[in-house]
Image (cartoon, rainbow, N blue to C red; front, side):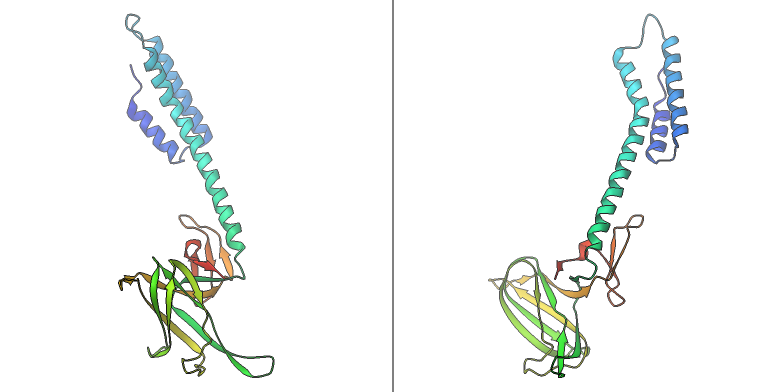
Length: 234
């Protein structure tokens, strides 16, 4: 008489799904031991259970405890990872970062001499591989170019760029939101995959929710992003 494998499978599934409390798990293990003892008492003396069969039965019984312990360990690791991410994310509050996006903000401020000065947020470029030449175009909300720049010899990865908020003719552009577009090619003239990056300030952190990671709050315009979305800290 062998213990029904389907029963063991069902118990293991329940235990793995963390549906059993400690009392229920203890009762199940006790029941399994009772079944095993009964099996030994009623076995055929001329054909007793072999050592490997005994070991197999005990191993199946211990699987219940093993899965419970594994779940406890994994839950503990998950909590530690979440706590570590929260600490890391909190350290970014008040810092400027680059995240996927093509927006540039232009504002006018007064300098120390009382004169108006145009300020623009920086932007970034993310290249999949080295580029021999990169064309940068900044357009207004009507899609009209207000500034262009050609950059040569950029390595793969992320690089940030400043803009003074002026046209190529050194004329300050009006306050507002502008867009950046990127076109990159390699030494052979082949297109290089590229993307523009937004400048934003980390204003807060949202703890990890079920099935999600820690989220960074970048304010009303940019909303929340994941830690993986941070391409560079400025």
